[in-house]
Amino acid sequence: YVSRKNLQAHLESKCPNRLHKCPDCGANNQYKNHQLHTKLHCPKRLHCCVHCGENGCFDERTSTHLEVCPKIMIACKKCTQRILRCQLPTHLNECKFEPVPCKYAKVGCKVRPLRKDLKKHEENYQLHLQVTTETVLELKKMLPKPVTSVTFRVTDFNKHKTDNDIVYGPVFYTSTNGYKMCLRIDANGSSTGEGTHISAYICFLAGEYDDYLTWPFTGTVTIELLNRIEDQNHHQLSFKMPAYELSDRVLDSEKRDSRGYPTFISHTDLAKHSQCQYLKDDTLIVRVSVEVPDYKQYLECIN
Image 1 (cartoon, rainbow, N blue to C red):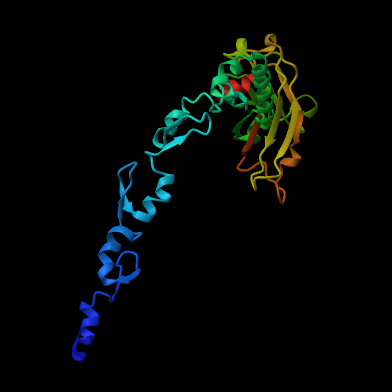
Image 2 (cartoon, rainbow, N blue to C red; image 1 turned 120 degrees about the horizontal axis):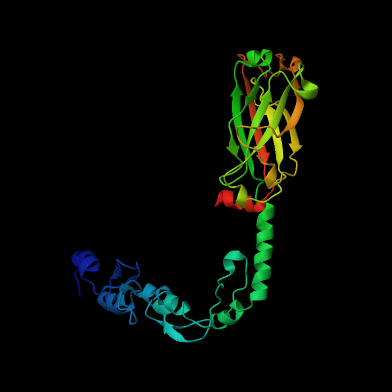
């Protein structure tokens, strides 16, 4: 028995049947049972995994942990062999029933045979020749057309015009290992454009790599006289190059074999307009672009 004056103190601190809240899981139990709860029943009590030996909360170690525990034996889904979970990545690198890419995957083969069938699949040379051919054709469609552009200035234009000068642009190659050529500008025109127009021609020159290139050459040339007011409304003409053979090349000192436009642009059209100004400070800016259709040469250029 407890006296009335001590009843409240007894209920709060001494009564074995008073409620006690577990500090870990929050459950209420009689105080006399709290040690038993802490050791045997609390879901948050410390528990050691019997497989890997790592400690954690009882409810986590006996549920979600078992789904990732590295020391639990599991069956390979490919071959059903039982192994430790931590050994699965290594096993899949050897498992005979694991789908693997073949050595021709880089050229488009999408077949993933089982490892045990890989050798037989890779020996199907007819299949892989077909796959490689299809991939090359698709890549060829995706590649941009190889175009080389060169820009140069023609200064003292009016003097060149008065003196009937021929001005040559810088010599350039159509790619790193490409064809050699340059642009020729006749300031006072030539042929049908003499005295009234600027004439523009491409000169095909003997190059260092000609013996290794495809002949005949059949590229496309675009010659532009740049508008100095804005980056549009350039005066532009394009033409297909003649089928130059290897024997058609000329020496740099000659530059005699020229193809292009004797009436590229009239002297009158060089005057300043509201949207176009081709002649400024007695200087023209000319850009020549050459598109080379030879696929082999373009691959050499980008490699």
